[in-house]
Image (tube, rainbow, N blue to C red; front, side, top):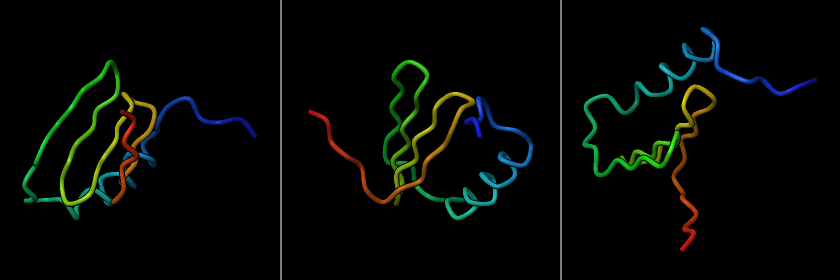
Length: 63
């Protein structure tokens, strides 16, 4: 089975449902590097333009 190249309507519907927990939440920081976006809330959200989204409590620091 090959990996999907982009998100379809069902993926977007699932993401919207997961993001509802952040409605009204204060945004602490937003970073963008090329086609990746990092949003700092009570949890961290990573987005790669049209490819994937990740919601996590932990962020690996690469300094």
